[in-house]
Amino acid sequence: MKKSIFKIALLNFCILVLAACSSDKDSTDEVIVDPPTQSDPLTTQNVLTYMVDASATKETQALFYNLKRLGETKTAIGQQDAFNSFYQDAGGYSDIKKNTGFDPAVLGSDFMFITDKNNNEQLNNWFYQQELKIVSDVKAAYAKGIINTFSWHLREPYKEDSFYTADMTADQKSTAFRSILPGGANNEWYKKKLDKVASVISNLKGSNGELIPIIFRPFHEFDGSWFWWGANFCTAEEYKKAYQFTVDYLKNTKGVHNILYAYSPDNSYSTVEDYLTRYPGDKYVDVLGMDNYGDLNSGNDGYNRANAKLKMLSIAAKTRVKIAALTETGYQVTATTPPINNWFSTNLYNVLHDNRTFDLQFNTISYVMFWNNTKDGYYVPNGTVSNASDFKTFAEKSKSALLNSLPKMYEMPK
Image (tube, rainbow, N blue to C red; front, top):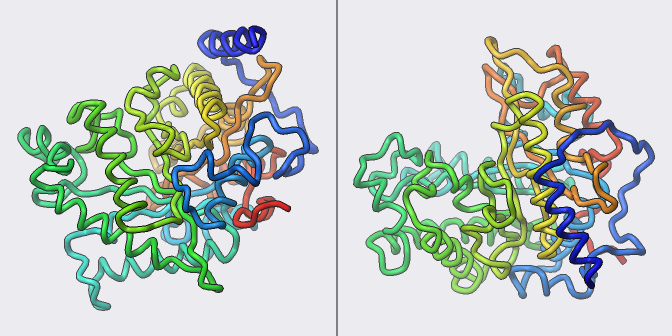
């Protein structure tokens, strides 16, 4: 016991002082979903013990288990709105598939348009059309074996025009988040938004009528001040209360049991203690995530910081038997911002997988998701741009996983 305590203490100390990146040493790794020697207490039989929802569907249980195990050997690669957001508006396959020949392993979606005040659920309504498209994409992704994750850029409760604080008055910024808490002036408004979310998730079904599991990360990037749920506009306790209310309402009041819940700040935290400042508790979180663009856009020192933060995240997830994920990242290339040489195949890959300073593998990031491409810029290169081969090399490395090397995520291993 003392030896274990000393080892954990040493590991935490190393995170603060060591973050050198190494090259990819392993070229024969295989996806091992249920290794014979497990480094944590999770088994196929006790998986519900470590999940938020004790009534989770069997497919949702399998997703939790398989994501946790996947992170021990590989990181699944995905993109926000991959089926609809293309560089230079080139339609067809996702830009990931155009480049590599394979579908992404993760598809990111958003409840933003689904819960928009202008969505009247009529077929001629643009917002409802977006809802139908998103639902169709999620079902198609699930049918292929892709992992589905949802963010929610929820517009503020007063005019519902924006989720950015830059578009809000000082009074709106200071009261919006508190107003959606139980007893607040906009709590009923918030419950109606959750009713819509619950309705959509409860109707996501596969070909056999089974509910499709999703990862849901409400109130993401909360440590920044750009969203109205940011740290400048609510206390830690108020944030926890809103997150807990959201989970309890969906799980207990609405009876939705096909969700894994993600805690997903931006990149301001570098210690476990700081990271958990607004943590709502193990009973409310399945995925410990982090969004990180800034560190990965600022040179070698930034890569080292990002690597250290993922080590911190991996240790926190290991301790709590949770999934660790880089829930958003990317470097956007535009007409005025050129690519960085080997950004994917060397820089990002080493950020995700460098463990050379440890005698145990602690970088266990189960998935990484890039933001969406646009007509004028891209986070993931298609096959026609100058850094296309860099991404393809990254995707083909031994610890990367597109759909072709993903195990069956919705089936528990025998």
